[in-house]
Length: 193
Image (cartoon, rainbow, N blue to C red; front, side):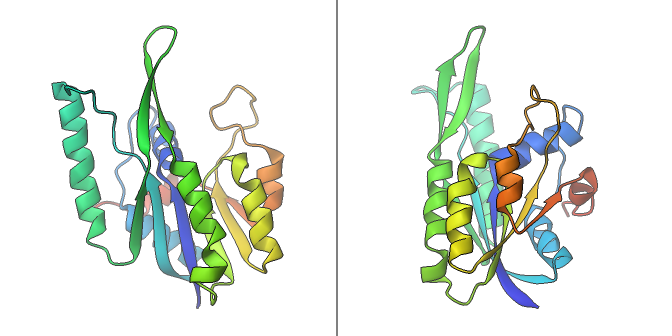
């Protein structure tokens, strides 16, 4: 089996998990999830790059914020024990919306782009990578990697409706050498032990 790297956008996976869980997050083993998606493509998972952001914390965190951070830290400690994973953290920004606060990750896409840019330098033996994301902002870096002879396998999810949170640009789909739609079964087949 050929070695490959897996790059995972945790924000995308979180939204998708909640979508497939009909409003409740699915519980699954993130490490096995990545490895099994690679195996489906007859590839050996050399390293998993996991991009996320800790939950927002106010200057004086409330109980809910403290609990979210505690759960996040517990999760990060658990997956950090795996030697084949690299966790890259951005930050969470709170923005006042029309009715309530909205939260968004900052810096995560930049970290992912930086790591993708350095694949051919840091991993010259890698000829194929797996991306798990749905953001068309990555099309330029995908095209750049392909010019360097690296094949791109894209695991994503989209819906045809323009109003969907999962509407995806055709440019993203076309940029990959191969794309596969994620399904609920991909999550269900990797239960957390």
